[in-house]
Length: 162
Image 1: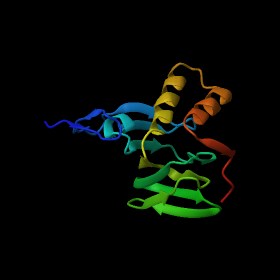
Image 2: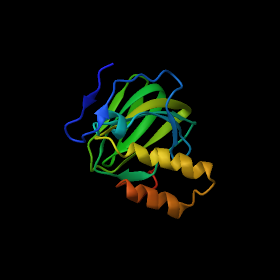
Image 3: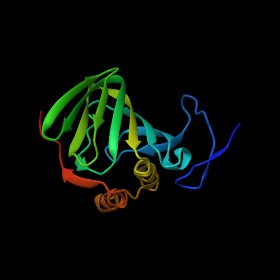
Image 4: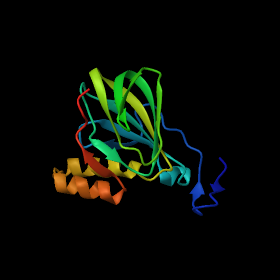
């Protein structure tokens, strides 16, 4: 298998395949079960990719970061709140949010499954670190806020009703 040095990081990159169910465990503080499928380390900084399974009603807080995000809805229904507007997304939908916009999302009454891509990569590490903190039973609001700040994630507050 060919190995290529990335011009921007100097790291050696290798093609790889992760099968269904493979990938490093990750989590969202609000309860999403995730697997890290690609990281800044594995893509030379290009992107991060996480597969998430969300319980009914799972919701993120409103937040903002400089990293763009793209979601592909694998199953279920989600409502995305982006820059003051609710956007519904069902199975097969793609949702793109440029970096810098205030946003959040909520899973529908049956929960859902999604792929989340972060462009460029790096912020996917937040979810890996959250998983570790949850495993250590050390997930205080202060610790989670500090982790978010390490990855440039600014918490704004709860999602509005809608």
